[in-house]
Image (cartoon, rainbow over all chains, first blue to last red; front, top):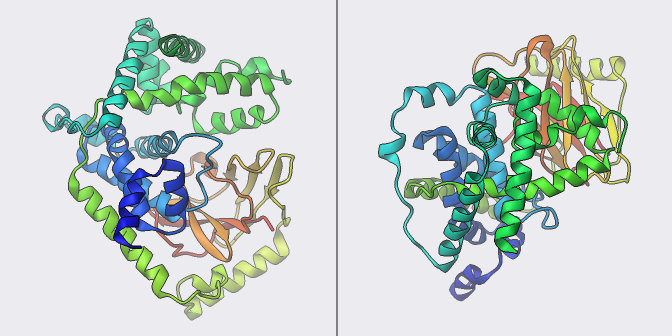
Amino acid sequence: MPLNQAKDLTRLADEELMRIAQGGDPRAFEVLYDRHGGAAFSLAYRMVGTRAVAEDIVQEAFLSIWRSKVRYERERASVRTWVLGIVHHRTIDALRRNLVHDRRRASAEGIEERQEAPELTDVEAVRREEAREVRAALQTLPGEQSRVIELAYYGGFTHTQIAEMLDMPVGTVKGRMRLGLEKMRREMQGATA
Amino acid sequence: MSRGHEQYEESVGAYLLGALPELETEAFEKHLSSCPTCRRELDDLRVAADALPRAVEPVAPPPELKKKLMATVWAEAEERQAAPKPRRRPFLERLPRLTPAWTAVAAACALAIGIGIGVGVANIGGGSAKTVAALVDHKQAPMGSASLHVPSGGAKGALLSVQGLPDPGAGKVYEVWVQRDGTMQPAGALFSVGSGGSGTAGIPQSLEGAQAVAVTAERDGGTLRPTQMPVLTVKLS
């Protein structure tokens, strides 16, 4: 690919880049990584608390995207949501297979390893604003709802594990998850209305 | 609203958060395929669940991660380009070169498959949900059975349920493969089995056009290509 075309890739929308990457173009794939690799790593790191494990998960997730070219379906989700869904799924898989829990418990590295991502672009600024909105929506939830949501989504725990931890019936945990998401949805729609 | 809806209506949130254990996930997805009420609520709440990763504090990935990733990607891209458009070899030809011992295993597999098991073949991509029985290599899994559930439309991935599979061994997991144009590709699904050898694996891709789904025992973390004989195969076309 001529250099000017390679540069032009950075101007393309995610969906178009994904189409080109699906055709086997590493440059398009690299642009996709540049756009979403940071969010993917941040999510995996938030869940496992260990840089080395988060790196492994993100590398495997992106390689699975590169190697399985037919998977993305634009009508179902944005590329970013789809990529983060894959990372979340793989991280939960690692957590449930006990690859991470022990290291996570044994590690106190979370705080000192935290490193702010550099401010990149206007797009990044918009994403940070979105992040603030989502955090604000989470903070509006009653504590018992945000707690079960965070334990499930970021902790990778099942509802039965959460029920044991919090000493409450499984049905109550599931109900709080559902109510919490519903309230978050309303808050977020209110914020963008 | 479908039959049994009350049993599942509280599970929508837990499903979206990834908090349902495997068996409940399987049951809930089966229910979803026949319950418009739950599908509607799922679509509504998905907005909130999909936003959760955006709330995470940004942490910069190490530059080495991109270097390692792109080195692999470039190497694989060059490999693909360097190879003349190959005749797609059948899956079994791409397994490790057969030694006499392997040949015996392969023959036993073929025999076991040929005489023992109900054969399920389905064309994916039609309108209705399908459940297809697997061909199981009873040399590897004497008590094994498995089925693949493909939701209606065939475009939403599929769920593989297994029973009676042996433990894959220390440091190993079961890896799921999707065969297209004669090539096995990782399905992005690894699973282990619990008591009774049961387990499930979600296949997060459409199986439209796929020829088969297969499972092999591989090293923990999975591999790029199958290195073992499949313990089970689901033929799709």
